[in-house]
Length: 308
Ligand code: NAD
Image 1 (cartoon, rainbow, N blue to C red):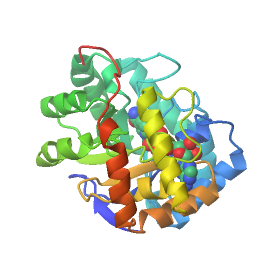
Image 2: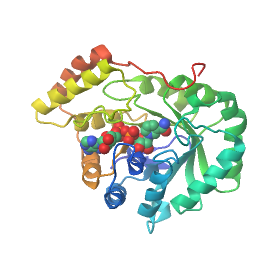
Image 3: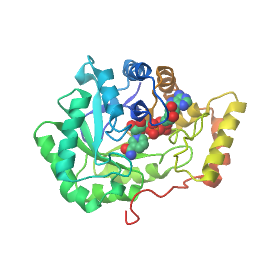
Image 4: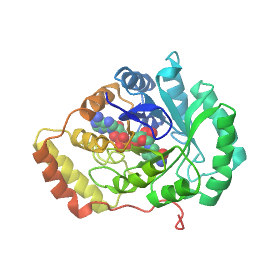
C-alpha cells in the first residue's frame, strides 16, 4: 500500500480507502458476514481510512461497519462518517440535528470519537446554513473531543469550492469526478490544496458504471454515458481484463488525491481492488479506452438545488 498526507490534518492515509456504502445494501442485498470480512480484508491489506454515512442503507451500513470494527485497534484506522443526509430526499443541516446525528453515529460505530465528520452532499442544502450553522456546530464537537477533523462532500465541485473558500474545512470529498469518464476533480484540486484542504476522491468505478455488472437502475448517468461505459467494458473483456481494474488504477493514480474510496461488500473484490490499485495499467488499452470514451467525457449530471 502507498500512503499520502491528508491535507493539513497531520494524518497519513492509504491511497485506496474503504467506502462502506455497499454494507448498507445500496448496490443490492448484502451478506453481513461477507461485508464484515470485506472490511477486515481491506484493513489487513493496509487500507487505513474508512468512509460511511448514516444515509447508507438508512443507518444499516454504520451498524454493520461498527460490528466489523469491533476488536480492531482504534488507532490503526481513520473513521469518517457524515451528517445532514438521511432517508430518501431527507436533508437536515441544522445544528441540533447534526449534533444528535454524531452521537447516534458514535453509538452505531461503537467508538467515542470520529476522525472525520463530513457534511453529506451539501448541494442539497442551503450553503449559507452549512457555513454559518452546520460547520460551527461540528467545530464545537471537535472542541469537545468527539470529532477530530471537519469536511464536506458533494458532486458539484462549485458548491465544495464555495464553502471551502468561505470557511476552514480539513477535507473535501467528491465522487464520480475523477474516473475514466470525468476529470473535473483533478482540475479543482489545486485550489483546495492551496488552502491546505485534503482532497478525497470517491467512486472510481463511477458507482458501478465502470464494472462488468454495470450501473444500478438508480444511477443518474444519462443513457449515452451508460452505453459508452458498456462499450468500454466490452472492449476490456475482449482484451481479457476487467474494466474495474483499469478504472480503479486510473482513479487512484494522481498524488493530489489523498485517497480514493472504493466500495465493496465482498472480501474477494476488496482484495482484488487493493491489488489492482497497485498495478499499472496497460498503456495501449488505456489509450483505446480514452478514445472510446472521449465523446461522453466530463458529461456531468445535475445534482442538488439549482442555485448550488
Ligand atoms: P464505486 O465506484 O466504488 O462502485 C461501487 C460498485 O462497484 C459496487 O456495485 C461494487 O460492488 C462494485 N465493485 C467494487 N469493487 C469491484 C470489483 N473489484 N469488481 C467489480 N465490481 C466491483 O462507488 P461507491 O461505492 O459509490 O463509492 C465508493 C465509496 O465512496 C462509497 O462507499 C462511499 O463511502 C464514498 N462515496 C461518498 C459519496 C458522498 O459523500 N456524497 C458519494 C459517493 C461515494
